[in-house]
Length: 139
Image (cartoon, rainbow, N blue to C red; front, side, top):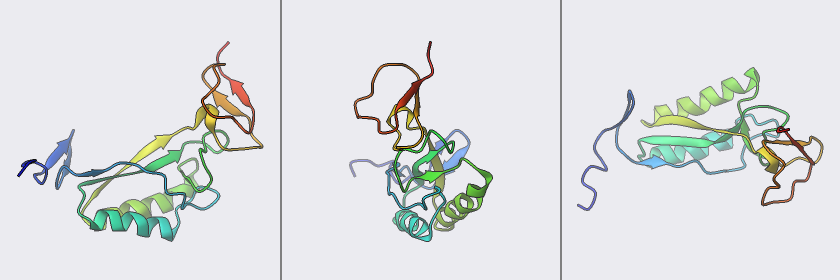
């Protein structure tokens, strides 16, 4: 076998994984407009977990309501209203034997909005046009 340890238990800090296979975060665009988890999104991650991965890293989640949304359909953890859906998603992944992690995300200057100006760490323009304008945070 080319990778003999791939199917052995793995460990990240104190987190023990059934194997060393991880699903990297990818953007599925299946959340509700407010960033809440949908049944379709849960079913998608259930299929990944059912495939036998040890760790599922869930797609980038917006960390605030005003400036971190990257794309329509993205998930969010910006409010307490998002917790039940995220808990259901994590439970669905756990029920199929995988561990769940969440990628935190802030789109910065490249957020997708036409109504709220983007926040960015500097005046340096990004590689993509910003639709909603830009407000830099540096002097």
